[in-house]
Image 1: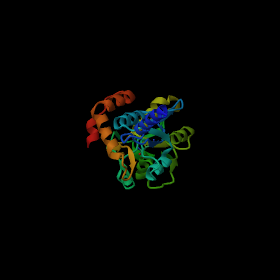
Image 2: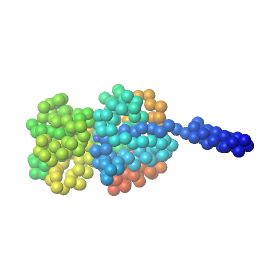
Image 3: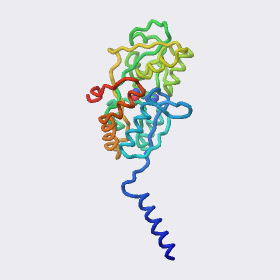
Image 4: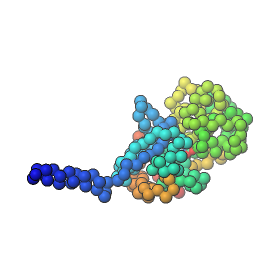
Length: 256
Ligand code: ARG
């Protein structure tokens, strides 16, 4: 009897510790891991700058989490519907999206580039007029292309993922791809056999910023955003940045 009582007490202690007030729920984070170097699959594993940044931020915030590779549009839907607690996927913060989502503060500055087969005479964004343009559906790259050739213009082909857009460039189904600058550079650098080139156009393509995306009125946003700030201020962000991009980040650019 004595033994049984001891065992019961011990079990209650373990149970109480497990459900203690300071233990947090496991969060679900959605992404679209086809956007190197931010998030992509490498030997069956999700890797990238965002993946490492997320790990650092969640550790700082004290959250356990599961990162799910849902794809782009399901990711947006799952955040809006509250199935995911947040998303990280090189997601641009803009006014349109702020109507349906909340964001962290900015963590990366970006702009767009035009990627095209080597030797094509493309020197400005305007040159994509009259060409077949590939973009990822529902992205700011799609918006940027539409700003130049017109909304829903039939010259624009929208793909479910950015990799599919690049594949269509390879097969000649499209003449150019408009996508985020760092992703364009990474693709050109890592795929010499694709024989592609790229240009930026500072007048046509504005600068934008990536943020973590949350459902409206998220209960964890403030805490995770504070953790992001800490990770940026304590040098962890710079470490991850240098690992992936080989240079030091310009932290002032994030403060605007
Ligand atoms: N920055 C762009 C946007 O927010 C493209 C992001 C695409 N990200 C991805 N993981 N496929 O619209």
